[in-house]
Image (cartoon, rainbow, N blue to C red; front, side, top):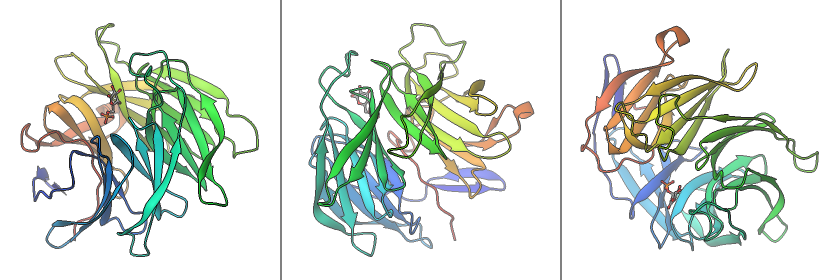
Length: 337
Ligand SMILES: O=C1O[C@H](COP(=O)(O)O)[C@@H](O)[C@H](O)[C@H]1O
């Protein structure tokens, strides 16, 4: 897609095949034109692609099995040239290092398996890692199935081992998080809560729960089966968190709940998007001036400009109609030359 700012517009440029059912995209920290994609299917794979900035064409380069079922997320860990993949139905973390070109995987990679389960129907069959975050040399894994956040380090033989963990409320389903200095914010899919923990370096004390807030819009029917999805953080004079939701029966579609983080975590706005079943949501622009989000089940793809609280925090500026792209599920942005 090409997003232009003046006047704001969103256009389909080209489509490229990337394995099967690609559901999460991550950019190389070395080169934003290098993109990694999961195949969220029973025979999970991790793919690398490279963007030609002049033509806008994407070319698939390499692929490696994640040895797991339905990989949902990729996080660049360690020096950024190792990728951690959450095998949601494989109860495992898969890690693979890349060759110096950041495009070719070094097979076969490493596996770590998690035990346990949770009380919710989606959790009783076991661990469901959903996201892998980098925290220095540590990999932080959100496990929606066991209600745990695993803190992992690599040992001398290259295997990833659990050093510590955080317990979330049983049945809450921690899904995605962001780490800001020594604070961890976690979005729990099943309870629709956003939690805040202190997050000291490993070995320097246990994380402590500071706050837990619902992201559920006040005008959503109380029994609606909402499922929290994505969490974004933008620093600035008022540091904000954007938490997206899915399955909202409200006539104006799913909402993005906006939180101020200072002086304390507090929901300040529910922005109705007109999108149905938001999974993918990300910042656009070098200073996070825009947010792109899509409804997998309707509403198309929209770009919202970040505006002042007085103007409602987010203002829709561009729209790609529903059906232009089938089931849009993840976004990354890079500058067009
Ligand atoms: O079956 C399920 O899978 C998803 C993972 O789906 P995704 O949209 O995040 O790719 C999970 O989050 C959901 O709770 C579960 O029922």
